Image 1 (spheres, rainbow, N blue to C red):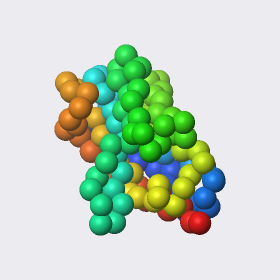
Image 2: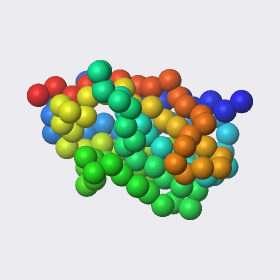
Image 3: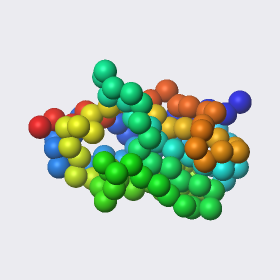
Image 4: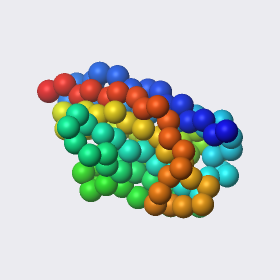
Length: 118
């Protein structure tokens, strides 16, 4: 049973920073890819960033240059460093993972709320 547990969300002013963490119950190196998604009220869920087991990363255009996804294999944890936050970044952020795919994810965390005030 794979468990993903997010933490690090909260309330921050525009221009501020937050770092989200996603702790996996097993080795993150066993996942072909891990990702962060977000969903704002009334909007569809969108992919924010992904990182593969080889260390390749992808980002949504809306967060490029502001967000950084990284992985700590020793701690079985994936991070999302979010800088220069904007009110439109407000959403529930969820961690995801898959052992075989880099585009669809079988495992999901419960999500953590990020609220950016203007």
